[in-house]
Image (cartoon, rainbow, N blue to C red; front, side):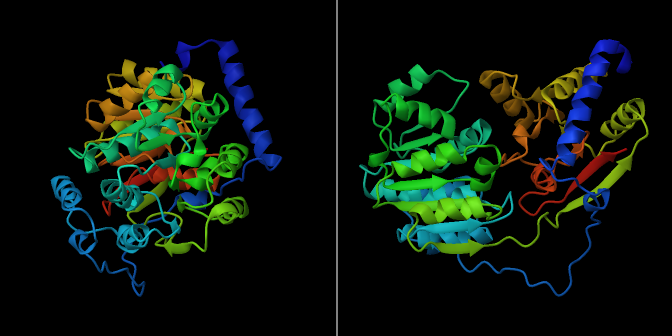
Amino acid sequence: MFQRSFSRNRNRKWQGNNNRARRSVLRGQNSSVSPSQYINKVQPQEGIETYTVLHNFSDFRLDERILNNIVARGYDKPTPIQDQIISHALEGKDVVGIANTGTGKTAAFLLPIINKILQNRAQKVLIMAPTRELAMQIEEELRLFSKSLNIYSILCIGGTSINRQIHFLRQNPNIVIGTPGRLKDLINQRFLSMNQFETVVLDEVDRMVDIGFIKDIKFIVSLLPQNKQSLFFSATITDDVDQIIHSFAKSPITVSVKTKETAQTVEQDIIKVNSKEEKIQKLDFLLRQEEFKKVIVFGRTKWNVERLARALQQKGFLAGSIHGNKSQGQRQRTLAQFKQNQLQILVATDIAARGLDINDVSHVINFDEPNSYTDYVHRIGRTGRANKQGKALTFVS
């Protein structure tokens, strides 16, 4: 049924896209991944030292109103990265945080920032993220942690009205959250001045470099004042990332809570398939099992993702898709539906693989293999978050 839904010409286009992807791998643009790297049967790890959290949130010098919002969110103890970073950030030190995805790093920088603004309402903060979805997620977390505190922020991302963003920038918000491309546009049009920011956060720096924002980041960084606090967060520290950090950080304190490339809470395995028809049949079978309650399915291209989402809908599944051809409003609505359990399945390109914090994702399925092991790590990081168990399955020909 799935194969009959498109013509032979489209089938040739699909094959051509995949052939080009294979050639780019052979040229070294993407690193090939051995199927053995997709397998990890979670077992108790003996002899591995685990980090012991030393503080309660009340031990930090945080405003009482922030502590009340933390309690309202249901948090009782900091995560390891929060435990180690919050004190340094509150002291105004530059910090580099190295951590796996899903470790609570957003709160590690937001809580000190909110506290700093409550102490001085004139404070201006810039937070840069690689994708629109991650920027929106940061803004959502900010709203929850700063509830009733009259702290104002503006989200500056592509896919939404730049005129509306200019309007809110003129209202002098405390915090600007944005992606490099849109921030650069606003700077070039002289609606955003970098010399006002006393605190700067670069989140998922390695991802910003991976997707080609390094020139934009360097441009933006070059306009920032010398006297500022800088907070960096990254899953990996490459030469390019290290260069960015040391170009404007002052003797940063490095905190690493990264233990392995992939979380020990994610059980990983492969599913062997011999044809596209078998691939669809096995995906259909899996998604009908009771344990597959909340699933992200990753595809390689925008066209494949949209085609797969529609095929699943025709089979009766509650499925939605996000990819680069969707408008920002469409992407936001689909993500909200998935977070609120109105959809069982989210079909996505790698645009959703990095940084998104979605509660209780039971499974990640790589319908199309990732282009690199780094992409694989970030895809499967959508499950097994906050020390919960998750499963990742990868279809392998």
